[in-house]
Length: 232
Image (cartoon, rainbow, N blue to C red):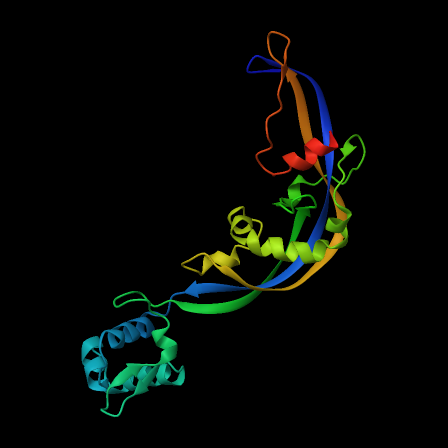
C-alpha cells in the first residue's frame, strides 16, 4: 500500500482500555422571551413606565395592558413603585447586562448521555469508534487507579470537556436547539460505569521511496502519545 510515495509495510493495532458511562447532569441555557414579555421588559429597563404609557406604546387596550402587566408581576419581573410607575425587579434586571440588550433568561435543565472515555487521559470519543474485540492487538497498560476511580475522574473530565463534547455532537441536540448561547454545565448529578471496552488505535509503519522508515505521526483525535510511547 502506497500513500504520498510511502509504502506501508506493517500495521499494528494498539488497544487502549476504555469504559462507557451513563452520565446525568444539569446544565444552564440562555433562552429568549416571548415577544410581548420581552419588549415590555426592555421598555421598562430603559425607564420606569406607568401602565398608561405601556398601553399607549404598544397600542394595547386597557384590558390587554392589564393582562400583560399582571403576568409580569406574577412572574416577579415587574413591580409597582410608590410613584405609580412600573420598574424591573432584581430578578428581571438580571436578564440584562446593558441598556438596549435583548433579555436572556437563564434556566437550569436536566439531561443525560451515554459516553465513552479512554482511561489514559480520559478523552471522550465517539461510541461509534468502539469495536468490542480485545484480540489481534497490543493492549496498552494504564494506571490502575484510573480504572478503579474512573467514575470520579470522568465526572471531572466531563465538566472540563463539556464544550468539546457538545461541539462533536455526542450530546442531545435539545441542549442547543432552544438556546441562543452555548449551554454550560451546572452540576453532574451521577456517573455510572456501564462496561469496559477497547479503543482500537491502528498504527501504520511506513518507509519512503528510499527504503527508510518514516517516523509515525501523532494521533490527532486523542492525546495519548506519552502513554503509547511507554508501552512501546
